[in-house]
Structures are given as C-alpha cells and as structure tokens.
Image (tube, rainbow, N blue to C red; front, side, top):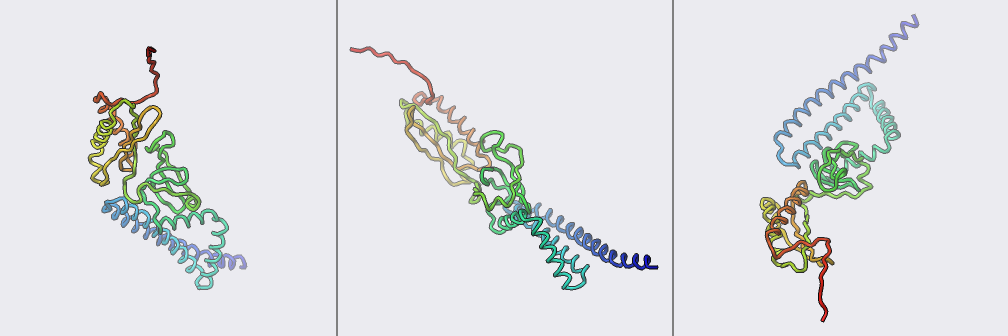
Amino acid sequence: MVNVLDYFDFLGNVVPALRTIIVAVLVFVIFNFIFNRVKNSLLKIAKTKKQISNVEIFSRLLKYVLILIVVIFAIFSYSGSLTGLGIGIGLFSAALGWALQKPITGIAGWIMVVTKRPFEIGDRIIIGDVRGDVKDISLTHIYLREIGGIVQGEENSGRIIMVPNSKLFEQDITNYTLQDEYVLDQVSVTITYESNLDNAMKVILQATKRVLDKYVQGSKKEPYIRTFFRADGVDVRVRYFTPAHNLQEINSYITQEILKIIHKNKDVEIAYPHTEVIYREKD
C-alpha cells in the first residue's frame, strides 16, 4: 500500500511538469510559426540592404525574447507562486552565469551590435586582422564571408569565418560601407622621365573615366591624379571612388584600359626595371 501511495505521489509531481513542458513547447511552436511567416513576408518587400538587415536582426531579437518569456512562463506555471518564480529565476541566472561566463560577454557584444549598429548584414568590415562581408549576426558569433585569405586582394575566398561577439570589445572594427557603398582606391602607373607627363595624366584619367562612367553618378566624385617622383620615373596615381564589393574587379578593368590607351601613345612610356648601355665618345 505504501508503494502505491508513493507511486501516486510521484505521478502528482511528474504530471504538472509534463503539462508545463507540453504547453511551453506548443506556445513556442505556434509563435515561431507566426514569426517565420511575418519574417518571410517582410523579407519579400524589403528592397535595401539596411531593410533586409533590420528584418534579420530584429526577428532574431524577438525570437530570443519569446524564448525568455516561455521559460519564465514555464517556471511560474510549475511553481504556482511568485516566490517559486523568484527562486527559479535566481537559480537559473546563477547556473547560467557560472556555465556561460565567456558567452555572456558575447551576448553583450551582440546587444552592442543591435543597439549601436556599427555594421549591418551585407557590410564589408575588418575585425582585427579578419576581413569579410557580414553574412549573419547571431547571439554568439558574427559570420563573415572571408575577403582575401587564400588569395591576396579584395575578393571573396569562398570561406566563412565565425568571429566570437566577445572579440568586438577587444578588436578595432573597420566598416568599408558605413557611410555609403563607395571607398577610395587607386591605380598606379610609373612612366619614364622622357615621357610627356601632361599627356600621360590625360590618357590615364580618360581611361579611368571610361570604366567608371556608371559609378561616378552614384559616388558624385570624379577621379583625380596625384604624381610622385621615383628613382626610375614619375609615379602617376589615379584615385577614384568605387563600390567596395567591386573593388578588385574595377581596379583590374582600369589597369587593362590604361595599358591599352598608353600603347597607342608614342610619347608615353611605362617605366620598368631594365638595363640600357649607352656609349659616348670623349673629346
């Protein structure tokens, strides 16, 4: 008889717990379904990078809030009193703080990203010595499409780098596209001292404008020339503003165009390492 009573006592403790778990899971599933439908609808009508980033970040924020509400509801429902709720939350917080000391710093970093917005999803950034395009912002990590890495330059390597959010408090953050989509780049050409400098500047600027024709309207900044002395000639550098994500591509096109147009000009010669032997007769 004692065993039967113990069995019923056990059931009396287990059934409320199971009921609480089932209700909490159902509530989460229903709200998660609604959130996903709303999120997908918003993503369909979002047009700009900033709008898409806002939808992704704030939908994730609402989901975390929902999980927290469900946990508090489950504790309150099971305990049946505010005292039990306070004890449950206290124990939960203590366990979380002890087990997740490092991730808590990461969560603080995530809160900083959400509130201060140092970068958006799609921005090209540098965190410490890591370069990449922001693919996703989670509670614990920033996911970056790596820039360079396998090859030198400003092109995606195809790899994904996961940067812990806690690093955001320790490393410098550089954002290529915080103000707008354009950054300053340059192509440098060294011409000989015997070349016609004025003509060289003219054709190099002409070649650059030909490639940048559709981008100048967006940046509202014209390319310009800077010149510097070198031991083997004059360094002619054409500087221009270009979309950060097309940096390497446009640089390559401008280089090709400059080379083609210089080859058509007889009074402009590119300087390169070589040896010339000149014989002169003495009087």
